[in-house]
Image (tube, rainbow, N blue to C red; front, side, top):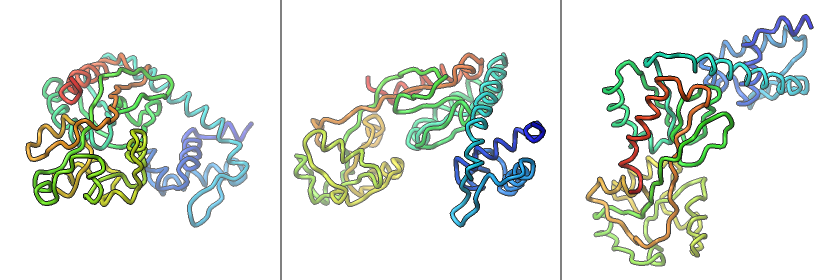
Length: 298
C-alpha cells in the first residue's frame, strides 16, 4: 500500500504510453513530453515499485509480466482522469480558446485550409489546431476535440453526425490521355499507368466486388497517401480515383468510365459527448457542418 500511495499519476501515464507504443520516443510524442523525461519516469516507477516493469531490448520496450499486471488498473485510471478532464472542460462558457480538429490527410489538405480561414474570420478568439492523419485519434484522451472522418466512429462516449456522402470517380489529365489514349472499358485499363494503393487493398477489393479480378501488379504507381495520389493524377502521371467535387475544380482532368459502380465515402463529424456543448466546440462543430457542404454530393 505504501508503494501504491507513493505512485505519481505521471508514472502510470508513462507505463501505459510506453507499453502501447513500445518505445520511449513514440510514447513521448503521444504525451507531448521528451524521451529523456519518459526514461526517467519509467526508472522512477520501477524504483518505487521495487521491480522492473519493462524488458529493454534493441527493438524497444516490452512489458514484463509484472508490468502487464499493472496495465489494466493504469488504463482504468487513465480513462477516469480523461473523463474528469473532459467534464471540467465541458463546464467552460468561453467562446474562446483552442479547438483541435483531426481529419484525413486528404481532407486536411484540400478542405480545411479555406474552411478554417473562414472560421477564424468569424470567430477570431478561437484558435485552431489541425491534426492531419489517416489513423483514428482517441477523442477521449483529447488527441483531438473534433474529428471529421469518412467512416462512422465506433468509440464510446462520443456524439456523431452524418453530414453526407462524397462520390468518387476515375480521372486522368488530358495530357496523359493524349499520350496514352482514352480507355472506354474496364478491360481497356490494362496496360495503362493505373494509380493505386500500396499496403491497403481497398481499391483491389472494390474492383473484385464489381466483378473485376485486379491485383497489386495491375497498378504501376502505388501510394497509401491519398494526397500524393491526387497530385500524381493532376501531374498527368496516370489514371486514379479521387473525389468528384475535387476533380471538378481542375478543368485539365477528365472523368473516365462514369458508369463504373464505385462506393461513396460517408462524412461523419464527431466530438466527445462531455465537451460537445462547450461553446467554442459547439461553434466550430456548427461551422464545420455547414462549411463542408460544397464537397458533398448534392
